[in-house]
Image 1 (cartoon, rainbow, N blue to C red):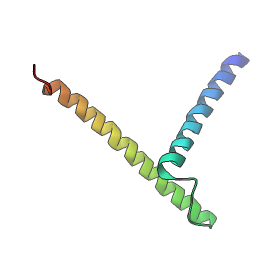
Image 2: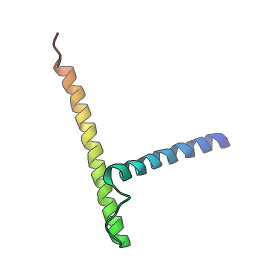
Image 3: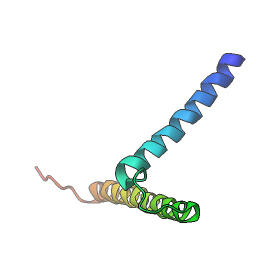
Length: 77
């Protein structure tokens, strides 16, 4: 029972750490140009919104490409 709980908690932590790492890597969230706590919260919030838009755009693009490949043959033989 303890191993199951530990495995579940480890899985959740890995997912959170992956998201934090992606934010730091793609949105430069580790380099803030503000010093006030409220301003930092606001800037991180905007970075998260930007990251979500980026993920949304990627998923829409992937779905559109998948749908397009089913309708039109891109490499006719």
